[in-house]
Image (cartoon, rainbow, N blue to C red; front, side, top):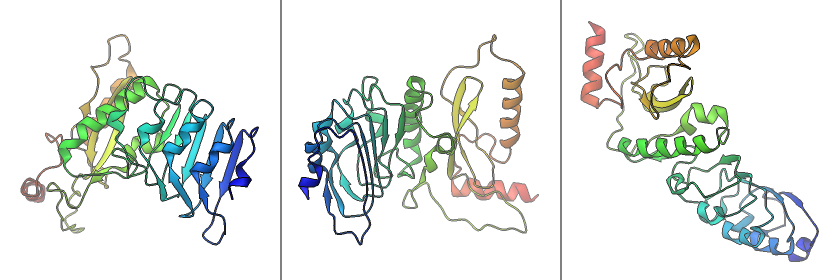
Amino acid sequence: YPVLFDFPLLRELRVRVTTSDGLKFDLGMLSGLPLLKDLKLLGSDRLVGNIRGLRVLKHTLEKVEINFCHQIEGNLMDLADFPRLKKLNLEYTSVTGDVRDIGKDDFPALESLSLPESVRGGMYYEFHSITEVPSFMQAIHLLLQRTPTLFQEDLLQRAFYWFPSEDSPDWYWYEYDNTNGYPEPPFSLQIIQAGSRRGWSWCSDDDHWCEINWLDPGQSKESSGYEYTEELRRIDRNVGFYRGYSQPPTLAEYNRLCEEYRR
């Protein structure tokens, strides 16, 4: 129904489509809304298109939220030069891309960013090798240096729920023995903030941490106060079972640690 989108003065559009609705919505229809600033689409597979179609609104769009629309495709970087875009939420779409491709001049006005797992570095992204992780963490660190509030705090702390794929050569199954109480393998990730310092580490779901991989230099003497010192002590208390490991141990190493833990 293209005629429904012929409103040249419209500045805000919110559409929710369910599977039972007769409406089929294509992003290409938005060309009839040249002054649109705020776009929110929530729905189903009846919402289709490529986000590149939003380029007709490059100079007006400030907020784009497209959620639960698995037929929406395209590349994240197709919106990188939108000068007014402040909020971009593409969760549960099929948009692709790589957060490491975002440069210092891309998304110049962006204040909030949420990405789907189909983007490398998006929420719930699965790594094919643990050796990939440092480059993604560095990319997130650079984005946070530019805009400290870019990501939701809960997602940031849990490192967007990233984890190694079960097809990864680094992944292994393990026998969780509640009788012996062995810690689980550290296949989860977290981002750590201690004072002005930021780092990340692998951790287990039962809260056993690997060593912290710091992303910036040590705290300056002027800002190394009581709170910073206490935070470092708290971090150190969580690095016990996996002390000396900055990444998940191999299966052989994990079994050895469990044997030593039993003694």
